[in-house]
Length: 116
Length: 229
Image (cartoon, rainbow over all chains, first blue to last red; front, side, top):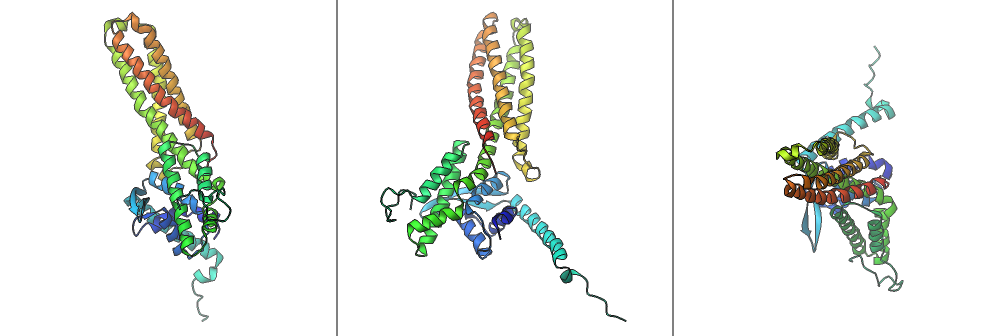
């Protein structure tokens, strides 16, 4: 999936990979790549300003923590972030259902009635 | 792998390390509050270093791993607009906060001085100037408070206007001009009153706070002119 297509969903992706627990920047990148099995082409540097923005909006919290031999900025989901993630999921389900019903009408149309 | 010159690449000791060069180029391109900028640069440097380490663990030579990491991250030209957007908003919030805190404080100081002492009550012209300056400063303060809200939690629901940083920068500049005029008025009038020591202290405080807001507003104007993504 191209970077431009991913960009609109970046917030949801970042919130989702932080749902299980706090992660630092590179671990977030690795989690996104791992969950998508490398399908998402993303300029990984763009996640850092995105993380800053989500923190400013109160959806993430962060703190410097020792990870291995270095100190790294670790991000965690806030309660507001969990709420936002749920909203993102709902919006995504509705979006894919709507697009799916147009692209693949046979899969979503009700089964035809048997001829009497 | 600290982002210093790599001597193991075979290109000689003068070959620049791709990670260090990338971070330096990005740092040169970005402007904003020092702390916010250094934090962002530090995180990106850490991320690049981690990416290089991940590649070298898979057996990729350092020089190639560093080039791969830089390519995956995006060029400084690709990253700068989105990074600058956050730094511009950080500078906007800093300027708005400085206006929102200092201007009401100064208005309160002026009000106390103006309402204390009968000699002062006789100076009608400074009073008129003060009222007008207070009105201008109050408008600037309201804009600053609105900007803080619009770039904070409200930004979850409302799109931040693209011209907001410029508006806050000019609000800060306007507040600075009001401070300077007030300071001059206070300084000129103070010898004519019995309250001149208090007025002099207020003038000095005004000058100090003017310096604080003016530098922040100047930085905000500069950030507001930079391209953001």
